[in-house]
Length: 90
Image (cartoon, rainbow, N blue to C red; front, side, top):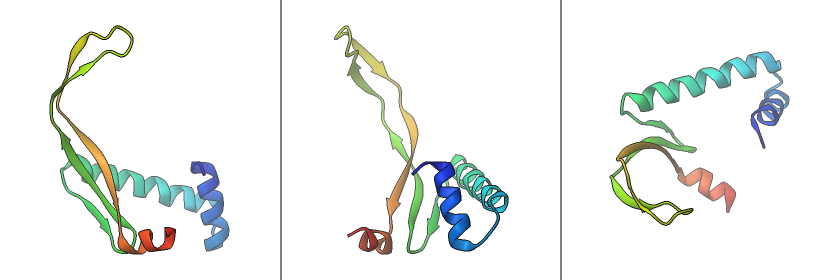
């Protein structure tokens, strides 16, 4: 399901106009991104937690040439599913 299909599904499920759902989804994405930039996490009970994980610097290999290369440390966004979401999937 892509973003457009998701908006269509939420619009039908909540009986709301697509424009309102789109605006709410964009606002949610912006809030989550801004919160993660600050180093905080967003927890939605029953759904899951958006958080930032630290990836340490490491040595990697260029798959084309096989040459060794340094990969810099970075912060990566992550999502940890909540119990209710895990139960719903299983």
